[in-house]
Image (cartoon, rainbow, N blue to C red; front, side):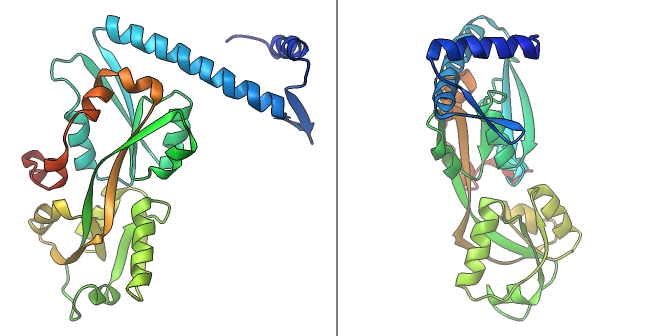
Amino acid sequence: MCLTPQTVTGQIRVLEGSLKGSLFKRVGRSLEPTELGELVFRYADKMFCLSYEMLDLLNYQQDENILFEVGIAAALSKALTSRVLLSVVPSDGSMHLACYEATHESLMERLRGHKLDMILSDCAGESLKYPEILSKQLGESGVAFFSSETYSKPFPQCLEQGKLLIPSRGTSLGQQLVRWFDEKNLNISILGEFDDAAMMKSFGFFKQGIFVAPSIYKQDILDRGMMLLGETTEVKEVYHVMFAERMIQHPAVKRLLNTDFSELFAGNDVKVKQL
């Protein structure tokens, strides 16, 4: 806003005078919002959201090339997220897609700060904390375990005989897997945990341990010389889309909400099979 600290301080004091109360309190060497400050912030945030919504609607009507900024959780499969996004981006060049990859927590912070239009993630629970964030489940897939080696025990006990490559425990899939191992009383040995699904698969393709992937990619992975140890639907990779309420009029978001992805998540999408 190109304002000096003194100007901002002066404006805060004027606002406090109008409201007849303090917006901040000193805690040690820092300032924290008072109850009044928290209340004012919530309303100010709604006001900014409305202003962003108005500007977005005007841009959608006037711009020939609409920018669509999407955050993608690193834990998700790149092939599947690519197909989801390509299905809603028009082929006439009227939309400029910008993708950013990070952890779910980082993406949620950027989404709430109006720095992203939408995020694709495997976690939806956090969106329930924020009434301004809407979410929809696009689909889900069971998981399969692959290795370059064979083991003597049946599945899932064979997982105890090798070292595992799994998604980070900070991801939804990683947490599900750890619980599933406990429920099956499996004494597993973890070689590595990964925030990035592609990196985990790369380790597996270099014949470094047992790795997990969505079952819909089973044939593709088998074609690359890996062996299927087993699969389960008790653990699922779930895909959610999250966006601010103001974004519901964005052409790409509207298209995505109206698209049926059942064939994609059933593993019947030809383009995904070819990836």
